[in-house]
Image 1 (cartoon, rainbow, N blue to C red):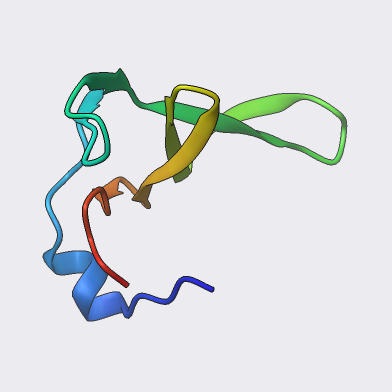
Image 2 (image 1 turned 180 degrees about the vertical axis):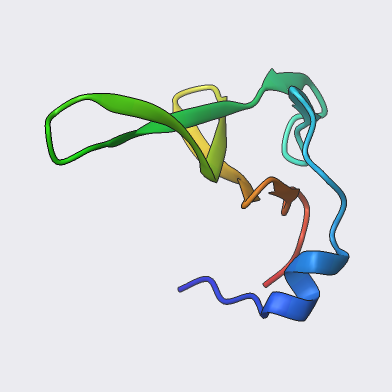
Length: 72
């Protein structure tokens, strides 16, 4: 489970296009997923963003705010 309050989220920095991975120290690209609309079309979504380190994916941002390195 991952919980974060609205006030805490608002205080976090904006996410960029890349992040420095707290696990390996390398720079990884931030990836956003698309929202699938009722008609089957898609549009970009900034609700959740991830980055990939090796074979694993990690949460990078919620609503455009960086959660990289945040200890829940």
